[in-house]
Amino acid sequence: MITVELYKVSFPQLGNYNVPLEILFTVGLEVEYIMPPPITKRTLELGSRHSPEFVCAPFKYTLGNFLEAIESGANTLVQTGGVCRLGYYGELDEQILKDLGYNVRFVNMAKAKYSNPITFYNEFKEINPNMSLKKIAKILPVVLKMVEYIDEIEDYIRKNIGFEVEVGSFNRVHEEFLSELRAVRNKEELNNIYNKFMKSFKGIKVNKPKNPLRVGIVGEYYTIIEPFSNHYIEKELAQMGIVVDRWMNITNSLLHRPEKKAKEHIKKYAKYDMGATSMYSIDKALEFAKKGYDGIIHIKSAGCTPEIDAMSVLQNISTDYKIPILYFSFDSQTSDTGIQTRLEAFYDMITMRKEKQNE
Image (cartoon, rainbow, N blue to C red; front, side, top):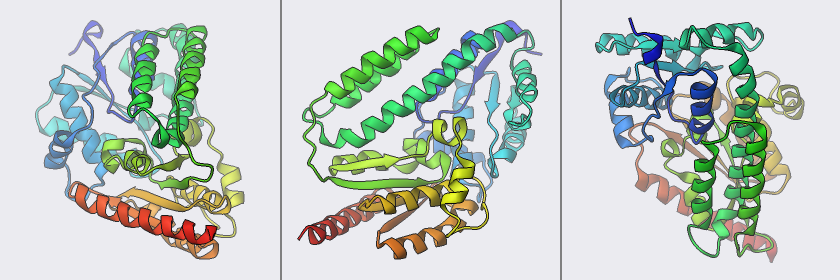
């Protein structure tokens, strides 16, 4: 039995959200946080080796990252819940790790329910039975606001990094921003850092044309947010000089989930919610189309049923608004070359289309 003093907790990487998670675990739950290694090809190989063959890629990534976290010293692993098969993955992760002989504690947040906040408290108690509710209540608002600031700043970066005069300027300031966030312990410190770095980002010189190419990104939650899993598509688009607009992040989809508005917006195209992120994929694709974006890219993991259902609706939007949509489905066998070729063809097509519209 692992004693509380030796709890070394980890959570799989997902974008840059490990920064606020580290503060939640160390300050709020008073446990040691083991930062999992960045997602790499090895992560996917490890996860694929021990996963059911036809499970979706996000499961393989998270399982691989759990195994890497154990190698780094973690003895308590936390899995999130979800509104698709992700909600069942915690049990499968736990059984696979047990079968592999790992002696780790596993806390499955899928057992918590948004409609009943006390269930989150119960899951937090599983992470540290001696946790202080007062400390959690004090740090949680800071953590949630930090998530919002990270999302806001990364949205600004996506829309401008493709036009920076000095290559690497945005990435350099972004890394400094994330580094300084790790020392934040209250809202005043957080607000000061946000204001300081937002000023820095807006001070970076960009050479942005008046009417640049604009591409909206929609699709499945994990594969959009974790850049390695989508082969850094946003970075590739930015290097082509494209404004990249992506609504899907934790702030928009979890903290301020616009469920009723989305249903109302898409009622012409979808009468029922098809699950997970599909409704928001349709809603945002429709919004990008109405705003005259030059193209849309739909991203999902292979076998993601809700997003497969959404694709036929997206095609109707594409037809109605004459907007091209490029579909990507990622798995462990997806190659960089194929993605690059399709992206370049898509870029050539939307560029020629825009030039024709401007004639």
